[in-house]
Length: 230
Image (cartoon, rainbow, N blue to C red; front, side, top):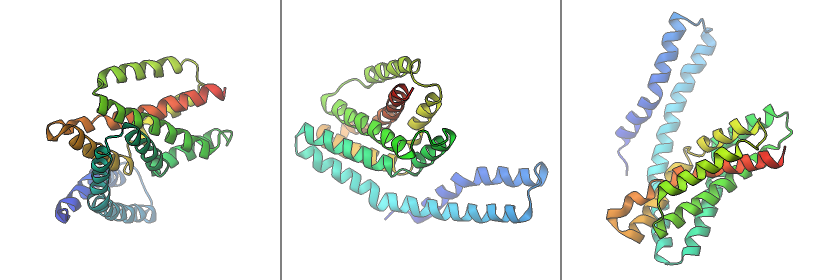
């Protein structure tokens, strides 16, 4: 059982700086109406409660389950099983990520619904799936992370010249929203479990870099979509 006091303090520290800034601004620079300000204070309390519940859920469920799955899959000794499962997990957690849905909703509205929200969500999900599978392949084969990063971002730079202008900023934002509250805990725990089983405790750091690679996939996927929708 995680330390509840530590989780509460962590949640408060995450919200407090922003809340303090807005409170100071309200009384010094910006004249916010009382009812809106009280709604804000209520929202802050609910946000802290939500973070506490999320961190508890992550520690009790997401992290142990992800690490356990990683260990069990690595023990099969079958590379294709690891790759397929990583791709499926990457797709599933991405389409469930709230920040991905928010981005897709705003992008769809900005395009006056010419690009369907569902198409954007599934494109981002497929991008994460492919690059999370690549991350697992890299871990198993011991391929240099630096080389993959250089090649991937070079390709992103080239594709940026051909994609539709309106897709370029959305593409780069898509890479950022995948590092959200649902995706990161499970993917890191999954990678940790695989690394510990495949390479031993001295190589647990192999699991780091999976999120970095996974965030490249949506950028490339969205840029490619922007090329075909020109």
